[in-house]
Amino acid sequence: MGATKFEYRFRWFLHAVIFTLGFWAPWCDALGWTRLRTWLVLSSWLSRTGWLSFIAATDGVLIAAIVLLTLGAWLRVWGASYVGVSVVQSPQMHGDALLADGPYRRTRNPLYLGTILHTCGLSILMPPSGAVFCIVLVWLLQVRLALAEEPFLTAGFGEPYMAYRNAVPRFLPAPSPQVPAAGKKPHWVQGVFGEIYMVGVVITYVVFGWNFNSMLMIRGVLISLGAWIVVKAFLPRPKETPAVSEAS
Image 1 (cartoon, rainbow, N blue to C red):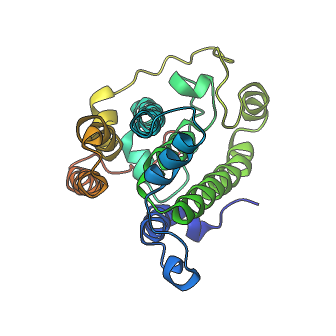
Image 2 (tube, rainbow, N blue to C red):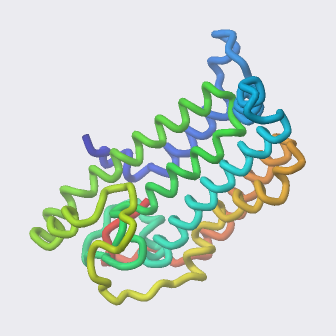
């Protein structure tokens, strides 16, 4: 089932609530569940298996998180550079032109996929129950958002969109482009600044992760969010006539 108009319009707020609950995990105290970071829990489990030392396991979990965050940030920057930050930020669906360039030749929803990957990498800083809660709800929300767009685009474009939908996977990217390029040029500077939060979180993990200080990294995440809020005020606003198909 696709997302409701309320969910689509306030998707940023819903993401914020989910992430806040993931980090806070208020049910842990009531249920007696651990508040240790998932990073520490996973590292301890890996070291107990005898596969790795605790330090090596800690490094391994961090590296895996950095890879997920980097892939997520790349997909979002790549997608936003083609879609345009005004559409990414818009509270409404856009469908005046069918976009089939950049990552959209391999996956129909690179922005939503990027958010899922980002969530998986960020979750190592949450308690385990908060991490599972956050990953599951963010994944479900991305699926609902994508399902809400499909009938909208089908009604707007008809057969061309149906052919595109049949050729390009919904989420998991195809190894090679599945449709010809339409010729749209990316705006990389806007894409990077529009996704400054995602980029900032990657930098936080790469620079500060090796200190093994979760609270320092959480501060870096919050600073990245603050930077995005400030930059967002200076980015292009959505036009009255929408120009592309995916928002996130």
